[in-house]
Amino acid sequence: MLSVHDVTKNLLRTFPNEALPPYIEKMDGMYFWTKDGGRYLDLTGGYTAHCIVGWNHEHVKKAVIEQLSKYTHADYKMFSDPNRDELARLIASQSASGLDRVFFCGGAGAEACESAIHLSYQTHFELGKKQKFWYISREQSYHGATSDAMSLGDRPNLRFYAPFFSKHRAKIPEHNKYRAKALGESDHDYCLRSVADLERKILEIGPENVGGFVAETIMGGLVGDVPPVDGYWRMIRDVCTRYDIHLIADEVWCGTGTSGKWFCIDHDQVKPDFVFIGKTLASGYAPLSAVVTTSEIEDVIRAHSGRVENSATFQGHSLSIAAALAVQRIVTGPGFLDDVASKGQALRDRAMKHLQGSARFFSNVRGRGLRNSIEYKCDSPQLFGLELSTRMLKRHGIVVNGKWHRICLSPALVVDRAQLLDGVDTLCSEFLNLESEWPSMDKAKIQQKNFF
Image 1 (cartoon, helix red, strand yellow):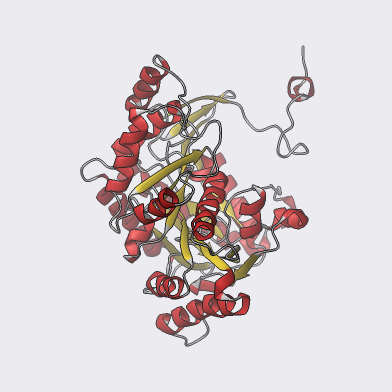
Image 2 (image 1 turned 180 degrees about the vertical axis):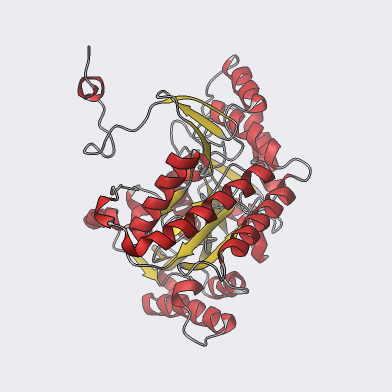
């Protein structure tokens, strides 16, 4: 009989020193089953928050099977695909600000990040502004794990790749009022200070050298679902316009309806030059990413080179497009986004009711739609999150994402309201129990775990 080592020895796992993760038997709706007999309610959307319409959705499966019977992929440059046309139309129809061009670029969010930068620089280049190759981002952001996306992001375990990074990238402080706002400082004054960080960096580099500002619409995976203060994005837009700099919004985490609006930036009533999306576009039924931009950008390309210069073999992959079209027809259905917004508000209200004033460790709960985090402050916060998520899994069969300083709840958008609130109730109860035990616990017994 083969040992576990023999079975897995040819697979290079992300964490080869850790115990073998459980094998999945099946997934359906909000649940997954493991081969060892476990059944779990997933409030993380597949742990990376990609699964927004649940697993095994009949409508999506049917669309994929129908496409599979026709063709799996028609080359993006050589053939038209009616599903691409329809998905692009659907995406553009959801933009309150008038974003009206969709470029399907690959499978991962990192590819979309780099495609947005490439399109931005190509536009500047074709207008004769060849020196605008600097791009500015923010600390405590994550934009993907390709070289240029890494150079813009701030994930600590990737910093050793710094020799690969472009030297023409710069960062300003994160926009996070929960950590960066000074004592007694108003939201408005903090907003002015945050925006001044960008303008100062632009002037330091020289506006004639800066091509764009790349930022997550809400601070996402590293700090946990932090929306901007009122007015932030409008002021950022004004600065970018003043200095002829593209505003590039990363909505890989918070786009395609997860915030309660299809484009998260529409909460802020701002029109960026580019929005890039990825993981949630096809809900994990297939990989797909895209850059959404404007007809003005296309007009520049038409008038000069006449072609988008960056391309990939599987961009606009036809099977992935069919899956994404089915997913986004669900997301854009009547009342769906309003329900996402309502459930998100109910989640935050319920957590506040349980924890505010009752939990010493509780700091805040924040988010938009069904992208939410509960932040806590205590000694060894990393271990607190690990222990809390372990108890949720082992005692209640509920998967939550607890790490660093917060618990993240990013369930599929189709989660039943009662199911969601029951999960929040259970989480808050365990939070309070663990908090009471924390001072006397032997924290050395808590098993450490890698998150990325």
